Image (spheres, chains in turn yellow, orange):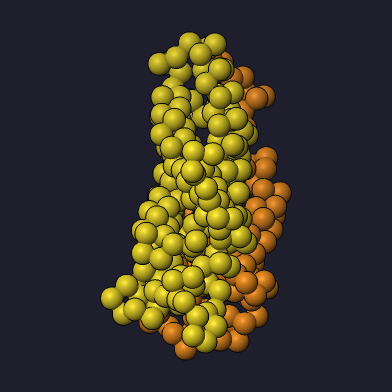
Length: 179
Length: 111
């Protein structure tokens, strides 16, 4: 339609990086605001109840999205990235081999992908911990400043892990697309 | 908003969640560095060849995280623990996890 088309690899790269990864990063701001403003002195009882309900759903959706992002990345997109190039093959079809063969851009693999592929898995674990605490403690989070602050710290760490992975993924894809 | 005493949830479950999560991250980081240092460990973690040892590193990390969470939660589910202390440990362990996945750090152990 409209001359737009994706190869299967481009399609999954978009699902992994832009749809799932992007959704996690964009929804972070809403979750952070929800946690930060969750204070009994700033809200009515009814308002707090609704906010807790939204946060429980939102943080679980974020955790599930984070898991789907790393699973699609590790099991679908990454094997295409790291597939070994046969002798004499066009290296542009084999991103890891292409990057490693060019000293000027090899750091995108040696530093970029090596960090991204590992640190990305921190995001779903941290996001799951946050979702569990929001679900378990609900409006008690509003009264317990310390627990709320600690939860926000883990939430920010989940975002940072996802942001590092997402940024490096976008830059690596620019240098050597999985196409 | 009111929360009566009987509805109060102790800090133990939160401490168990924070600490076990950080342990999972640390294990992923530790295995990342160990598999860089030892080909034997890297090969042992190669559970799915198209993705290499990444699957084993993260798989072991997740298993250890869930087991740690189960046992810590079981031990602390009805207890108020020192949340500040447990969270401080969780942050230290998490920071180590990040460090152990950082390529300029783990390549110094390359075998």
